[in-house]
Structure formats: C-alpha cells, structure tokens
Amino acid sequence: MTAERAEGVVRAVVVSDGRLLLVPEQGGWGLPSGTPQPAETLQATAARVVYELTGYLVDGTEALDQGDADGGTTILCRLLTEAPSDGGRLTPDQLRWATAEQVVDTPLSPPVHHYLQGHTPPI
Image (cartoon, rainbow, N blue to C red; front, side, top):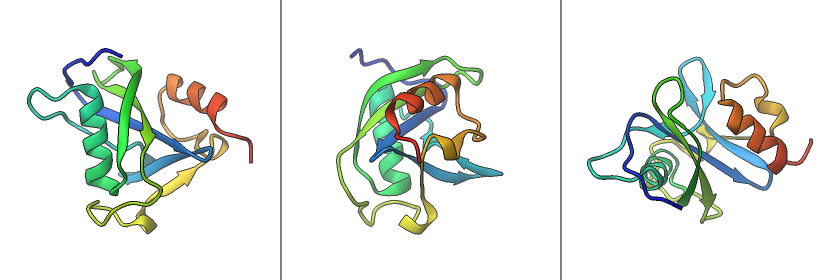
C-alpha cells in the first residue's frame, strides 16, 4: 500500500456483513466523502471522513479508483468497530447499509460496483 497525499474528493467504501455504508446526500444516498486536510493521505482522509460523518472507526486500506471524473479517489476501508460512537454528525438512523442489488441505481463508480459484486452476498 502506498500512502499518497490526498487531492480532490475522497470517497470511502465501507462494507460489513455484505452491506455497503451509505450516507444521505442531495438527491439520494452516496458514499461518505470529504476533502483532505493539509498533508493528509488518501487513506487517512477516508478514515477521518467516515468517523466524522458516522462515528464508525475504519482503516483506509487501498484505492479502488483514482482520478475519476471529478479528480477524486475512492478508498476501500475496513470497519474496525461494530457500532458507531457518538462522535458522528449523522445518527445511526440517518445511515443506510445496503446490498449490491440495492445500490444498482446509486451513482457509484464502475470499480465500486465491480467490487461490490464480488464482496456482497445476494439478497
């Protein structure tokens, strides 16, 4: 794994028990995302954003895609806690855990959809 300085929007893919973590965004649901702080790596940005939004601790492990249409990067994250802390801006009832079939129409990059097909069981 290479630690690269984050630029643009960083999106986090968090999968647990075959379900993808989604947060509300304008017009629907999307991946937890945010912009990097100075000198922050892609992995650190993804982990920070997930924690700040949801309260879940994650470990950013690898890039699923990099330099997409908006210059952002999507980072695969491993869930480290079973339940969120009280530190997230969103409450647990504002979060959604969805299967690959449930996110077919969600605007996710092709590498994310491909990853989900191999890592989430069918309904």
